[in-house]
Length: 279
Image 1 (tube, rainbow, N blue to C red):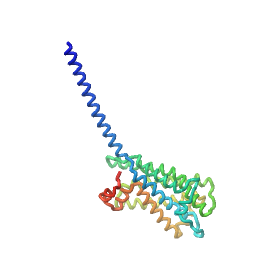
Image 2: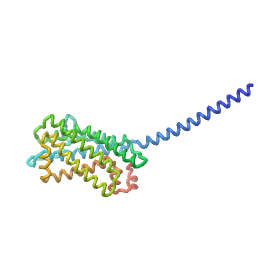
Image 3: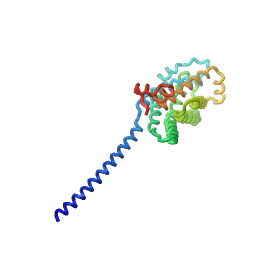
Image 4: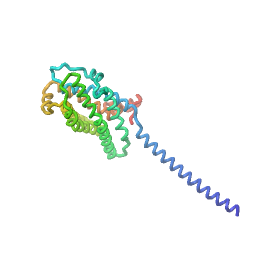
């Protein structure tokens, strides 16, 4: 009798042990999958640092474009670098505003993740990344873009724009600009050859027009009249060059150092040897 009970206890213990072992194996496999998934969403510090530092370049470019759009040729222009260093619109250094803005923009793309399994997922993922970057960048742009106009106005002692102009009209214009800019560049990341360069030309044309319109509106000036005037003057060549540089730098922000340099012709092997991450 005792032997039979002992035998039954042994059988039950064996079943419990086997069940626990299967459960542990399943849990281990699940954790392994979660870890793999987490690795796909790992933060790339190189992209964050590049985003923050590139923000200072964005600031100089935006100040130069705003300066070219807002001051007349009779006014002595103040250096964009000087305005970036000295400007404190809304009590915050404009340089710090731009560093934080593009650090946050670079981070916003990474939290969406990038691990598609097919072309449809890849397309949808790029749309999500572009939308997330647009939301974050444009939210902060409502401060920094007005800060740029305020910095240029104060540095050159221009008439102070009305409160209505700086709050209402430019908001929708800057939102459209950023939607075309970041949504377009996120999708352009997967293009090559002529289609890539055509996409860049379209983005440059659309965003330059919208950026000028928003800046002029924020300065409380007529949009159509001033854009037409700018296009007819030699300064438009400089503005177009600056905006082209800015669009290229935005692609570098979206694609990251690895994607940008690879698109410029640097081989994968060279990038890996220099320690540049592709994630």
